[in-house]
Image (cartoon, rainbow, N blue to C red):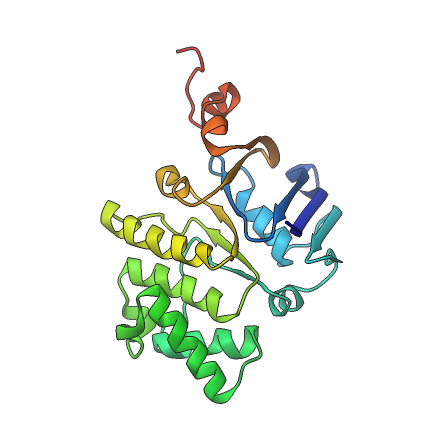
Length: 242
C-alpha cells in the first residue's frame, strides 16, 4: 500500500521552547492513525505543521509523493488535505448548507450544481441533511461537530485530519459520531485522528502514536501501545507498576 503522508525529522520551536521535536512517521493510503497524548503535548501543533498553518523550523513534510514543506495551507488543502478543529468554527450566521458550499467551492474548486450535489451527498453522509437550512451558529454541539466533519469532507480530501472531534459529547452522541467516521473510513479515506476519548478512537484506528512534549514516545498496534509502561506513566498519569 502506498504512502500518502510522511514526516521526516519535523521540528518546530519558538526560541528555546520546542513544541515539535523530530517528528517522524508515515501514513499509508487508506489507513486510520490515532494520536494521543496529554494536554499541551504538541498534537495540534503537529496538525498545523502537516496542513501548513505553521511553518516547520526544520524537517520535511511529504504528501502524496511531493515535498510540501514550503507549500501554503491553501495549496495543501486544494491538494487534498482537510481538517476539523477542536472548537467548531462555522460561519455562524450562514446556514449549514452555505457552510458546506464554502468548503466545496474554495477547498475542492467545485462550482454550480456539481458543488451543490457534492454538499448534499456529504450532508446526508454526516447526518445533517435535515438541517441543511438551519443557521450554523444555533446548532447543538453534536451537530456543530458534524458540521466540522461536513466542511472537511466537502473539500474532497484524500487525507482527513480530525482534532478531538468527540470531545464534549455524551456517550450516545459519541457512538453516533464514531459510526459516521467508521463509514467514512470504509470508503478508503486516509485519516489521522487526535482524540482524548480513547474508547472512541480505538473503534476506528489501526495504528496509534503517542506524543509528549512534542516528541513521539510510542507507535504501533493500539492495544499494545495502550498497555506499554511508558504510555501508562506519561499519558495516563499512573505508576506503571502500581
